[in-house]
Image 1 (tube, rainbow, N blue to C red):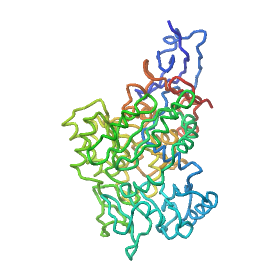
Image 2 (spheres, rainbow, N blue to C red):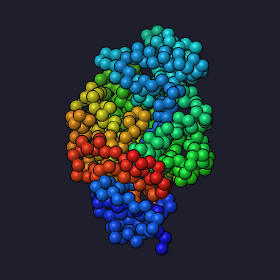
Image 3 (cartoon, rainbow, N blue to C red):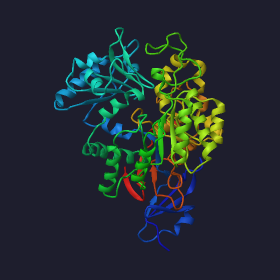
Image 4 (cartoon, one colour):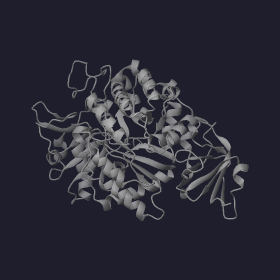
Length: 550
């Protein structure tokens, strides 16, 4: 008999396919799990060179899997090449940071900033203008992307570089204008800012690798063994330097990447998926791979582009109509979504559809239903990303169509302060219905949407389990939709593996699966929920290799 390289034993073993724990052990040989069960079942795998980890009182579980991040954006945001705008309380503070950045980096040919949000600037704050940026930097493009990601504050040079004029129109989205019809410098929605984002993110591969490497340790320290790097544009881009950087890092780093990278490009609206097929053929190993493609159905609540059945309660100056009837809209028609989803599924791709509003969710489910009529249930899993709102009948249809709900509970904290203003108290109790989703038999996956939110799985789990702010104050959004610790952990492991179309290889502790295992410094189960925020990762193993110890 071949002995194991590692054995982890604990009275709190969580294997991922259920929402409970047991007293037992797991054995690892090479990069695979070879045994799971009681300690007596596994004891025979212990040889003279086996490293035995006694984790009594600590939770041993599959590595966390985040199915929704924008890691490429985040790595750049946290680097010296970006103006960090998080925490700014006014446009003036953003301009001060721009001035300091320019003085420290006088030779930069393009400036990118991320993290501002008008809602953080206090009641009555107005949208900033290009003239404000021009007054500080007028000779190179300046792109300041909001923390909500769906809109951009740009100077005149950035608008010019991106080909945006007062006459430019977009399929969905718009460049804001003043009373004279001149551009203000605010450009709304993904379809409209896609070219701007591509310009702002144009780092060469050496810098792309440089900014990624520090994040690899952060991911491991948080117990993340797999993440999705998901598209933030509506059409395929001309190059994928970040994908190439991940592939090269996997070849260059000792032991390869310490985290699995699921890359999810845009599928576009044309029905031509040749670029996605080309990328899938190129990136298809166990660490860097493509299984799905992404598309947007609607936008976000902040700028009233989430597509709702009922109108928004408030009116924004940017709403196309000012009579209180505006309810957002979809990026494209139902016919187009049906066609491209059916085509993607026929090619073996899972599809990841961004929906926020209930009307958008219906459109996504309709598109998946149209594909099912042509393709049946394939080896892929389709997902709905975010899904703040959904009708009960659409949740039931999701269960029948085997659709995964990929949710980000940290968004609850972001939108809790504005929920009544934007949607009214009557819709407060229909947001992020995690309890309903699970009880309806829909697979729930948890992630973060990093860098739009923090990256910590513990914060995500805390919000889902307590529906409270960090100070313990209950949020107004659906307190009865709270779920258990076990259900949240399952969503962050096996649920997310299904969203990634990798459930046959990761997401649970099972013989034959990759040895992606983490050890937490406490049990999680049976603890005061406030303890969730205090929990730390003691050890992270990815692909059978210990990549982090506290």
